[in-house]
Length: 408
Image 1 (cartoon, rainbow, N blue to C red):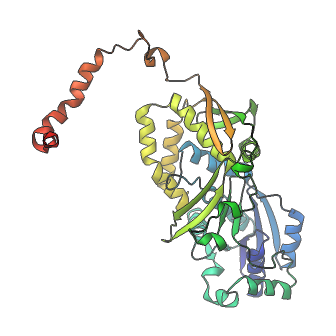
Image 2 (image 1 turned 90 degrees about the horizontal axis):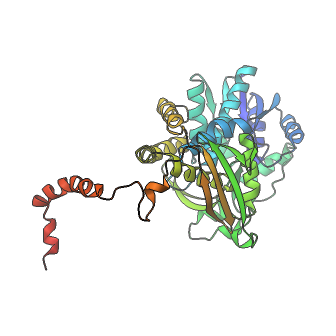
Image 3 (image 1 turned 45 degrees about the horizontal axis):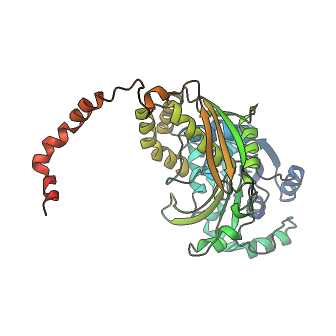
């Protein structure tokens, strides 16, 4: 009997897939990879997997690994897909796949199965990660199988199948949208959100945050500390990576910070609309940039910012394990040396305001930057500097015709 490890959430889709694969003759090991989803009853997850016919159910805690080894290096890059999206779902997929393949090696399974659709990005992230980590792995993606789709054209058929097979499922009707959760963010898409002309912000039952208009009328300050570009403490308390993000989710979430509504370009070629809540990571991105403003050389920062879209696209598309990514991660470790300091932020009604920033490696010199008289910068030096900078322009002007712009 062929053995398969299934990335298992315990929800409707993966429970049906588990039972379906068992019916198809596979020995299925359910793998619940804990990346900080809202607290599920893990014992109930195990019971449900057993009821669906799983040969075993494996619970793997990957919360610290997710934040430490994936989210924080992405933060060091200031990586945002298409300029705004913090990629909480994208970052979690390689961690989930890695955990599943670790189980596959442990139990001797040759197949890796997931519940991602053939239209989405997650199928790319799951499969590309799996093939990089184990080139011999065999992928089972039921939603790309026409036989499976004919059997389950919609949620109604899946619910009926669950009831007929005594699979305990909470779902009873189509949700107005779907969601995906981990400790970095919660994403919402599909259903009522598929029409970009429909206002969606007010229609979500948020899990990490409140809407800005419902946030407290009094602002709150929070202090975040960094060492070499990595967050280390909140309000003076040293915390592990996961606990640090969790703490900031709690603080920033109640102030309505970190909400995004965007139409993005999926890797498979279509546009899709999603709403994302990322309160803790939104605070970290702002605080990190403020420390960099003090400590990072201009040319190095501009180089990093110029390359950043490539890094973000690789994360979004699922190429975490790639030689180009290896090089990018090596670069950012070097570039972030001395991005060390402390930032105080004020959170208020969905906004993040800087209060103060300090660093033992600050390149900011008030004696040079001052606009008051004196100081150590000799303004006479700017005359020669600008004559040299303007030399190419004066030469080009002979042929570029810019002077004609002055003619009436």
